[in-house]
Image (tube, rainbow, N blue to C red; front, side, top):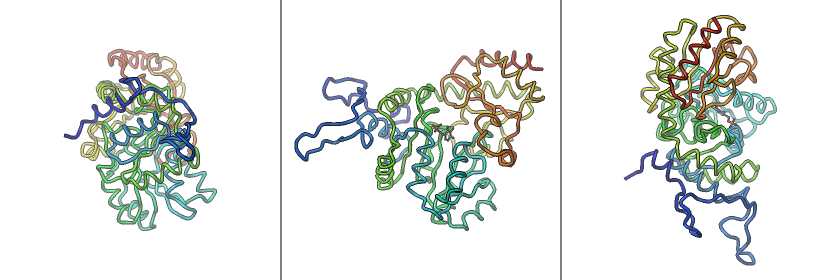
Length: 384
Ligand SMILES: *Cc1c(COP(=O)(O)O)cnc(C)c1O
């Protein structure tokens, strides 16, 4: 019987130590490995290329996403950059969402200006725009669903089909949901990437990324290039990530329960002008979310009524929502898209993507939801 995701997440690498019988695999910090004899390298020779601790974390991640291979990298950005480096040559076209992660937008924009490849940003929920983009013979299509920060959901299966018909490979940034709530490879994706910095590690103390491929050969190529350009993840980060991964399923479960409570509270709060969460029937792509996700996730955003002063008062009054970038940790965070996560996007692009200056994004943690709601309540009162 195929094991369930929560089991895979907990059991990664347990009891693999043959020297001492450690239940939890030890961390291997050595940068280099001795040769058994002249011209007889062992399985590992140098930790940039391969490291036993990283190997275990990679195997667990590949299994969780239903892929054949995973390559752990130094950050989510280096994971995205690795995929583009392997698959795109000068002149090749990348199709990306117009409302993709701000760092991804900046990477594609800056590198396309230098001629590394071409990029076309489109609204992938717009069928006409998608068909027009596919007619331009892209090499790679990046999908991000739900999107950041408006939680728009696009049909992964449909976009993958269109991309494959056009001869392109597809890569899904699955950071916002984790494999517990969405399995892009089963929806037709060729590659899944994550910022492991977020839900996968879950404790806001590691920066790392991962590239998971469906195809074994492509995975070998990703690993070769990751070593070549030197973006593989450190042993210590791999160790912490593996530790965080063990609680991924219960963390996601609690974060979603808390997010649902916060959404229900914000829905009846008059100072909330607009609320975004895939669970809401009027959220763009709600029906698709019901079909392709196994939960609505714990990220939400909302527009706060009032001016910048109202916003400043609201943020200053909050105690349990730390004003900080990033997401997916056990602690609740709040961020302001225009000046923080999406500051790398020029104003017109932000406006075109529907990101207003009053938009706040919340990553709901695993604190008690009653405390979270009480904190929001007093901050709304203090800001009014
Ligand atoms: C954070 C994030 C990234 C970038 O990952 P880093 O680990 O910060 O480099 C990419 N995509 C999404 C959706 C993210 O949230």
